[in-house]
Image 1 (cartoon, rainbow, N blue to C red):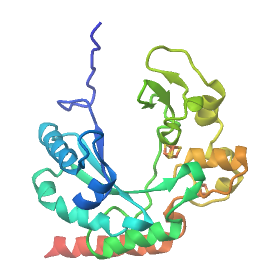
Image 2 (spheres, helix red, strand yellow):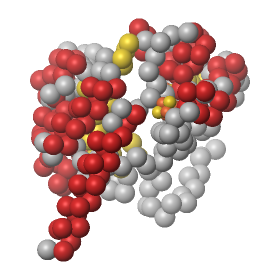
Image 3 (cartoon, rainbow, N blue to C red):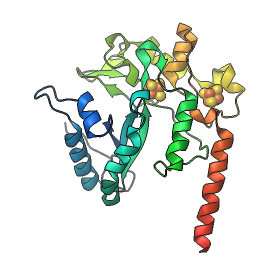
Length: 257
Ligand code: SF4
Ligand code: SF4
């Protein structure tokens, strides 16, 4: 039976946002992300597909996640420069940095302070102008949202991106409604709330930060691993507010001119 798409947003197409990813500029990306056969890089294909999508769906936000790690930290601004013309044509393309974490080793490659410094560096260079004012995030992530799943290559359903490929952590499949791992599903959905976290209950950022990364909280609480689940904002609230103030002041000045 065909699936009927019910549009409730008033947009012509129901998809609110999609994501493409790059690992750096063409040379860097193509060394890391290759087609299986032939052995060539995927950069041009991804950018071409992203452009086609952005043109065909102007009401859909096209998020471009650019992966950032200690080894390629300079790549973000170069990719932004490379796609600047594309963004003038398609303002629905939205580049943002995705910081690489080695979850299998429970290892944060760029710690909270380095991420925060990265944002300020990009801000000062005019590359990344995301809002610095803390905004209430709500709804959690894929792991805690009731209708959100990551689909594995063989149709497995996961709640968190980190679990993909580890079939012990699949909570179902696209082939049926059987829940494969109820305890894990319960951990994600109800067992990791910031409202039950003693540290969060003392923190002035609750609930604005939305409680941080769920799998990190589970690893801390269930596996006893030392892991940092808080956002960079926690380190730099004052600096964020100063920049927000300066930004607003400049906007007002431009309005008066
Ligand atoms: S910043 Fe960290 S401690 Fe504070 S509420 Fe968010 S997750 Fe909890
Ligand atoms: S639990 Fe953390 S890693 Fe997993 S989807 Fe949520 S934010 Fe991402």
